Each structure stands twice: as structure tokens, then as C-alpha cells.
Length: 229
Ligand code: HEM
Image (cartoon, rainbow, N blue to C red; front, top):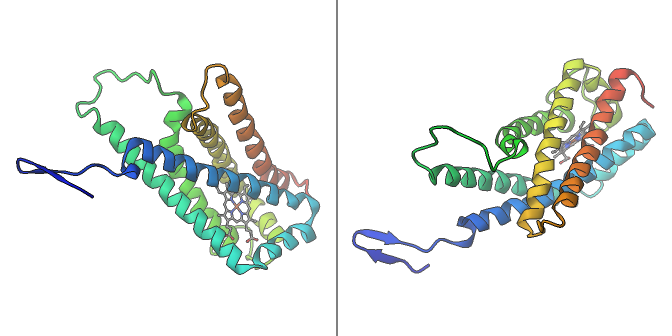
């Protein structure tokens, strides 16, 4: 890339992905990938309510094509890393734009949900690491021994421990807050925030978040309540 030298300083034009718009685009594209995953993972998990055989069959089906499974894992991992990287870059830029800081800080333009993004994100990352160690790797075994291939049994054992269920439920509520604002920001990044459509788009983002939270939370709640197939 061409650089210009002014005095002793070398000025280099910034690349698209280094610009605010570029990083917002990365957040939006990776956000779409993650929202799609979250939605389809929730649908897949709901097969728990069809019984042991069905959810275990689903788990086995995911492993039938290891190449496809690994391709999906790589896409997810790259999306998570880029999503976090661009969020950090945008946060640093936002703070750096005002080196002296505010004497009286008023969050006029940022909603409660948008401010929660920066602390709900790291908690969700901690949740995902715990979740993979718990239900994929079986390295954490609350409630009893992890059995490879017995998705139903692993869920029942884990969620019978009240504090494991509570941790999942709290994390899912945070996920709901995160994706409500994330989905809304996504519509804005795609330039769909015309005043006429804004109320509808906000409602759609809210609806999506509520459906996802209820779909996920249904499993630990039903196991704790002893109401399960
Ligand atoms: C109550 C909520 C959830 C339940 C009951 C649940 C259940 C499960 C189960 C049973 C597996 C293992 C599937 C198998 O190996 O056969 C799994 C894997 C996984 N879950 Fe979840 N999940 C929940 C929430 C989430 C959330 C919110 C995320 C991400 C934001 C997530 C991300 C993943 C990932 C990345 C895998 C690994 C898939 C793989 O590579 O094999 N899960 N989940």
C-alpha cells in the first residue's frame, strides 16, 4: 500500500477493515453467522423434548460427516474471533476519540442494551468455553460421568445440578440481551433503520431474542422441574 512521508512521520492510508465502517461490517457479517448458529442450535436442542432416542440420533447425525462438522466449527471459531477483535477495535477507537474523558458521563445516545454489550460479551465467551468443556468434550462432569453419544443423559445429569442450570439460564438471559441489541444494530448496519421501519425492526429483534431465550431455557427448566420425556 502506498505511503506518504510528511516530515519524519510516515502516513499510510488505512485499509477498509481497519476503518470504523469496515469493522462495523465485520461485526455485522460475523453477527449474522453467529445468530444463524444460535437459532439452529436452539432448534436442534429442542429435539430433547422428543425423547432420548431422537436427541441422541441428532447428536450422532452431526458426527456422520466429520468434514462438514469441522468446516462449521472453523467458520464459527473464525466468526467469534473476528467478532471479538472488531468489537475491541471499535471500543478502543470510541474511547480514544475522547482522550480527556467526560467530567459528567451521561449515556444519552447509548441504550441500556448497547452498554450491556461490552460486559455481556465476555460473560458469554466464558459460558461458551464452559459449555464446550461440559457437553462436547466432557471435561467438566457435573451431576455424573459424561457418556460420549448419550446427549440426553449428559443433559439430564448436568441440569439436575441446580447451580449448573442457574448458570445456563443466566447466560441465556444475557445472550437474549446481547442478541436483541445485536440484531437491531445489524439492521442499522445494513442501512434498514428508516424511521418508518424502526419500531417494527426493534420489535423483530426483541421477538427473535425472546424466542431464542425461551427455546434454550426450556431444557434446564424442564429438567429441574422433573418434567421431561
Ligand atoms: C440451554 C442452552 C444450551 C443447551 C442445552 C445446549 C446443548 C448442547 C449440546 C447437547 C451440545 C453437544 C452436541 C453433541 O456433541 O452432540 C452442544 C454443543 C455446542 N453448543 Fe450448545 N447448548 C446450549 C446453548 C448454547 C449456546 C448459547 C451456544 C453459543 C452461543 C452454544 C454453542 C455450542 C457449540 C459451539 C457446540 C459445539 C458443537 C460442536 O462443534 O460439536 N450452545 N450444545
